[in-house]
Image (tube, rainbow, N blue to C red; front, side, top):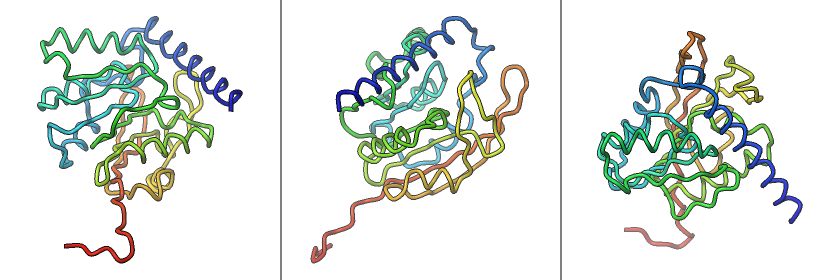
Length: 229
């Protein structure tokens, strides 16, 4: 157990260093994932019955502008998680300079593989974190974490490179998914609801094909003999 924990901590530290270096040395227009708006993420989230008072987490939020969109929509219980302290510092300065309410966002510097959330979320969003998990054990851990911390009936909105998307990003290998393959990673705790394609245009004009999937956390089945009504 100790050696496994040490290995996880080493992997998390290496990941944090990698992403901190990128955010420290490159401008936004030099990062492939930069978007002028929240795009498919915002459209899919806005289509779901998630009330403003309910908890939302953006896994791998980095410097992305989804948090700005969520705040503008009146959400005040937002968690933004990223392995890069540098990225979250940039996003936090932007949000605070816009005058949003203090305390509306909880900023968490952590590798999702080692994260221990407090409480559950009605909505879990991930744009381009899951596809970096090339180790099956990491994918299993992620799926178990989401199953444990998304409310029954809540939703997971996840975007990865599509089957014909890039096979590497920022110097790291990725796993590409179609909708069925992605849904299989989260069974049996989640059922797929909606799938869509997105062609993301990088700041330098390259097309990146994404698979997006909305999944719903299954509600517990009643115990035999339970009377409902």
